[in-house]
Image (spheres, one colour):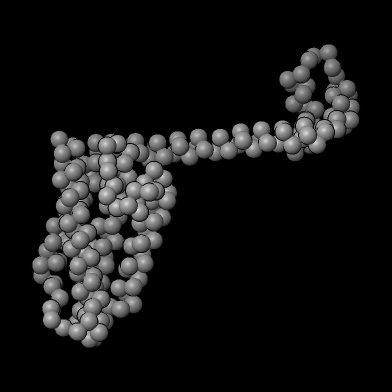
Length: 212
C-alpha cells in the first residue's frame, strides 16, 4: 500500500493475496482512499530500508564467500604457488643481472638505466598482484596474521584491501616512471623489486606448508 507501484499493480497484488470475496472495484476504492499517517509512513519506510540493507549486505557476503572459496581451493592455490615460483625466479635473475651502480649521486641522470626501471616496474606489478591474491586466499582460509598494520586494519574487507594495495603500487610505480632517468629512482626500483621478491619467497614457504 505504501509502495511506489501504480494503483493497478497494487490492486492486482491485493487480489492475488487478499480474501476472495473482495472484488476488484472494492480493492481499487480501498487503494485510492488509503491515506497513511506520517508516523506509519515513516515506520514502514524505515523497515523497508533496513530490509534492503540486509539483502544488499547478504549478497555482498555471498560474493565474498564465493571468491574466498575459489581462492582457497587446492587447484587455485597450486596455480598461484607455481606462478609465484616462476615470477620469483625471473625476478631473482633480473636483480642479479641488472644491478644499479653504487656510490653515485642520486640526482645524476642515467639514460642507460631506464630499461632497468621498466623491467623492475613490470615485475613489481606482477609480484604485487600475486601478493594480493595470496593475501586474500590466506585470509579466507583463516589463521593468517597480516604484519602490515595498514593492511591488517582493513583485511576483513577485500574491496578496501584491494583498493589500498592497488593504489599504493600504482602510486609508487608512477613516481618511478616519472623519475626513471635518475639514478636514485633506478636504485629505488631495484630495492623495491628485491623486497617484493623476498615477500614472494616467503609466500612460497607459507603455501608449501599449506599445500602439504
